[in-house]
Image (cartoon, rainbow, N blue to C red; front, side, top):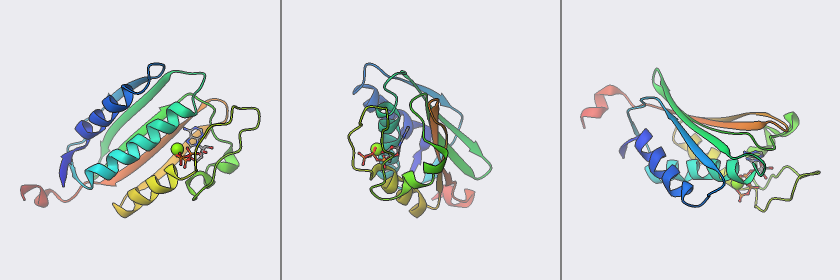
Amino acid sequence: VWFDLNQAVQETIQDLQATTHKHILVMDFKDTGKIYSDKERIGQVITNLVTNAIKYSPHSNRIIISTMREGNMVTVCVEDFGIGIPDDKKEKVFEQFYRVSGSKQHTFPGLGLGLYISNEIIRREGGKMWVNSTEGKGSTFCFSLPVADEIATDV
Ligand code: ATP
Ligand code: MG
């Protein structure tokens, strides 16, 4: 369906904010316009990324969710200031059942499926997902989706 990406992100964030008092979900939205995609699944991806940001930030409370449009791509990023990911594990986190083992960190519960599923959803919708991270400082997970042709917006 056609939907306003910022509105969908905002709705998802509002639901998630209600589940955490400790973390503050900050929104930094640029105009994205409407996209043609699977709204429910995109919401699920945002939920997975923000849930991770919360879970892997036990000692910081700010999470920044930003959106932007560049040309015919829209991008959503979720930035946290948590435990971060070691350089050699960054590609692996998108694999099925992969979890970074928590050395001196707490052990965080999970199956290692959230990012695998999220990455698959974005790939099937024609987009891509990536991560920037510094161990001990935080992580930024982003995904981009194509904006469908203008001509189709009249439908
Ligand atoms: P679940 O299936 O419940 O989502 P999970 O959170 O362990 O379990 P993924 O969401 O796929 O699984 O994440 C895979 C691994 O990547 C995590 O176990 C964690 O080690 C690492 N990771 C994911 N997001 C972050 C983050 N924001 N900061 C630090 N590490 C992260
Ligand atoms: Mg997860």
